[in-house]
Image (cartoon, rainbow, N blue to C red):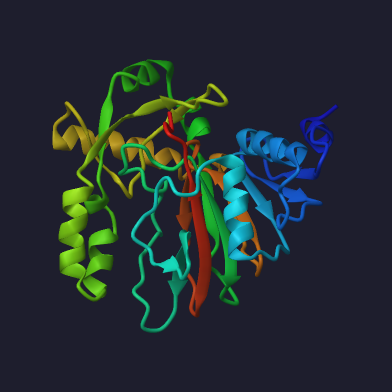
Length: 289
């Protein structure tokens, strides 16, 4: 039996279509508007651990149902960024590209909100409006990126820690675009001081090692000079660029994507003209690692 054949029969509640042996799968035969059945919930958790990113087409969700999906995997109130929230639903963030709407660029590899001490463990993203062309999202497996490293470098990296900060990202430029942005930025700086995470972490579900750095939020490696740190991080970030570790999604209306925020990084391709609207719910645990 091939890997693909095994994947197709491994799940009782739906069919899986893997995109590669390493990362990403489309899930067929699931209506995410009702995820109350425990057997379905267990299969979804198992599939996310195995494939790291799951794609679902032609889904129609209310905000309550969107949040309920996140609850299959964790607590939807654990960690949020600075995006506006859907009216009446504090767990649902609005990511929008439209005239007169401040735009935050996510066209850089990142793991969501890694500048938190306890970052979210995953994300459920739901497309409400998409441009006619472009605006794909790409995910890279941080487990596979780690596996590509030479053994000696792996050993050294496991002794290192890195500093993550929202100030290293596009958030300061976003605050410049919004009303009272300076005050909000100063408030965020006082609340979200830089945090330190190990460069290599172990996934608590799969037991696999993860390369836990990303260009958007990782500022430097502790104990190295700036020149040494920049050189090392450039090498590590380059691993995410390898097509062998990636999966790419072309969005359609009413697509839902669920991904493991510990085991992946992602990149929103900024090649489109027109409006885009996504609703996002992140989920977490009391302790991500």
